[in-house]
Image (cartoon, rainbow, N blue to C red; front, top):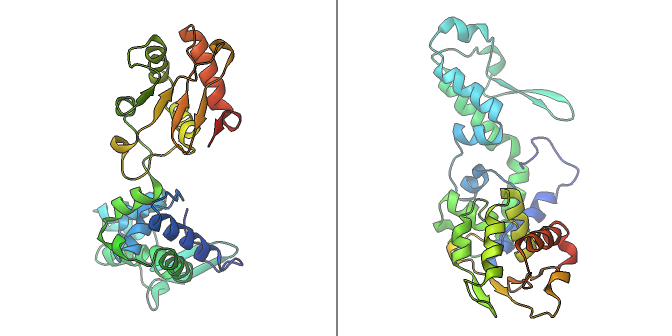
Length: 276
């Protein structure tokens, strides 16, 4: 997700998105818009670099790195490049990166300047208005500027949450209600869970908490409960989740096979098996 380099008809879109992100930060919530690291650098007043362009536009980033790494003058000349960039939005527009750039060829001597100007154009010049709108919205949503103490990676994690997990740490932090850790149903549950594919585990997390991400404070602080609903006919009931309190209501199934069947059905149709 990034800002448009050409004028958009929805001029308030990024102001609204910025406001949502700012409010989320102010209230300690996640706003998992898939912005790259460069956005958080810009929010903190830091200049994005070529490595950030490689994240946003991998092919372009690698091509520019290849220009910097090229040792043969002839190979650079054969590229027939000049100090321009071509915008290919609604219409194709050639933009000069510096005055008279269309008449300045990229050579071994000036390639670093070319790459720096290209990166600056992508992250600053071409998106000046939509980013300013986003920043105004962000400051409206989070007027206190204590977030300035974060590093870019920290601010990104706080807003977007964690997407990589230590699932055994998740198991370690569970609180059991009307269950004991060594009860057969609990052992069966964790055996089934740890054998699930990564995407199914994330689906379980979304089923349990309403999000497939862990808040930025970290998995080691994320706790949830597994409770026995104490039903008289457990094999006929599906697991339920209370997303507000992060509690899984897990019936005492008579076998691992039934537990797996019921759990997978619940997380694959989670809109029917969760409540707050």
